[in-house]
Length: 376
Image (cartoon, rainbow, N blue to C red):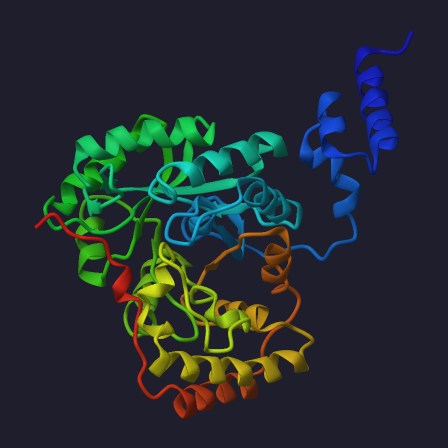
């Protein structure tokens, strides 16, 4: 009689052989996880570049799956089945870092990520970053609230929605000027001591605010907006983070879709889509940015890459950038975003990018319109 372990391995190999190519729901009925079903499919794919995340022990993919769009809110809604498939595709392609937040769909994004993680089956191999410090009413009016009470409420809700026992990276979403930063930091450190979070991060903080937080305890990461069209972070924040050993996960890597090359400059956006209020998408500026992207497309083509891949690769090559967040609605978009490994943009082409920006963007504008209301 074969030992129990031997029989278990034989059964696992039998399942993979028999059910290869079957619909996933059939395989799950026989106790297989998504990652087991797709293990053979992943072989031969170019591996995603990994990096040590600052002063932590986390080795993460350089591309972070952003899930604001997953929640649908501010993006014209979402197809939950497609959104879940996009998360699974990212994991399949080697993205092991996911960034989410309670406010993304008012809990929906975290729930969808949690469902995908359960289906994937290897939660311990995925680094989860989420946030705290925003609240909303029944009319979806959002305001900042980083009080200890709010943070303690949010952590338990996030853990439940995500289906995990601990958050790898817990970030204050926006600085709240109605609460002392020291109080918010002290609360995060207590959560760390209690084993509910591993590392502390900040999002949308300026240098002075980060320095205040550092007087209380270690800050492991900062999440600022940064992309080819929004460069403010490189003036002070990115050099400061590099100096202090603070990892960065820059968001807006595709500038809310503008850097994908899919727009003509004539599009109009429906109610409920944040780009309706984005000054970059107003007629006087929209065409400037579109023409710049068309020139980026030509450079990207010389590498056999898409405009989105070029934009993400550009960000990854900038000093002080550890990882770049890229959102995706569909598995196809995920596949495009993952094409950043195994190549680099030359110094000459980096210079060409600066020339294009200087020539095409006459009235640049930042992402300030996205800031939520303060309590004061």
